[in-house]
Length: 472
Image 1 (cartoon, rainbow, N blue to C red):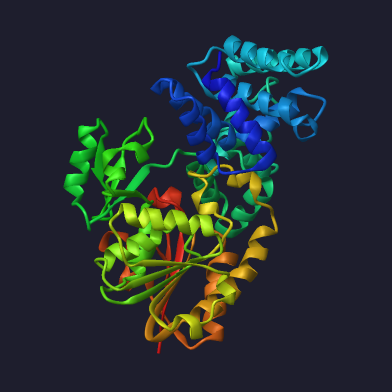
Image 2 (image 1 turned 30 degrees about the vertical axis):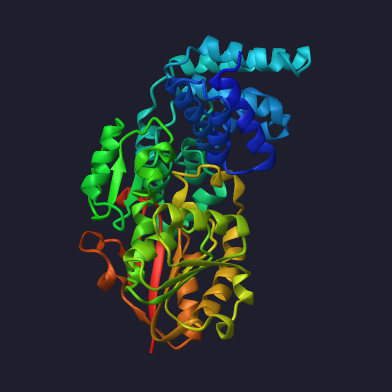
């Protein structure tokens, strides 16, 4: 019998080997197994995202229990151990013995007897240690509290890292992030702030949707969702955004989504388009437009009057962008599959507004994409910052006199944010405009100097950066 736990194992194994997008794998799996009830569908999603979110800490537990390091264990066994350990150490509703027995049964189909015995012994020991962890010693608890991380329980059950001796290593284990990342964030924003950031990055992000004002009002969209048993509340900061409380279904199947009344988009992402502030009748260029989420928002703000040219190297993403625009009754989006750096103003003309939503490391969106933790490397930020600088200088060439350029990322490193923006200011004649003057009233505390900055732990939004310039 196929269960949600077995399906979760196969999804996680696929992610371990090929690293595609987990949300698409989950959606495809649920479509194939449509007979799963709502509780099992929710458990499948919880298991996949929970293991991805806490993978670093789960591997640390494996290292504590095994003579073979987690990264040296065969992928099929490693994934099986992570999945079972997540149920044992993080979930209350699944009995430990059920998690152990499930893992052993799955292993029997592909593993030799000695590996099955290894899995069984390791998981049973984890259950024994994790059943009643001893309370933390006061000094360890105080040291951990300084960084706003859960204090490591003291005693012989687990050999927890000491936050006094190596706070970055302790933070890496307790919040399940790479140690190079915790070290870097402590250096950039300080120990306490880094602890708050990593703690927030492990929370499940709220489901946020933008209202398509071309087709409906916020009140009508909320009423439409309520008819389908889905509770939604207005965003506290943006008049065209709503938050959906604990959706237990795929929101793309709702009438509100199918009819183009709503679009999934975090408030932080919506603010970028508001910072661009496009007007009806203008020409707007969306470089690195991807799936066209911001393009459709820009077109909506323009009241579907003018032109939005969405450029991306990926033809399949642009196909999705076209479909997304059609669903929302938008007709002014035009797409172009081309390398941004090969695109020239002579072929496109100049634009009133240009948005560069640059490729970045994505550390501001870890709440939604926990797999980022394990796909990014220490040198990625530097590598991408070089690309970002080149793209931004090139994007400036498309801005007509008096026009506006906006640069945006969904990451938190200065190397990809302020440093890139300052590079443009040193190499073009564009004038920086303070973000504060162009942000919605309830978002004006989200600034860092002249730039827009949002943080998960400060604003309960994705971590975004944006800068705005005008050509003289």
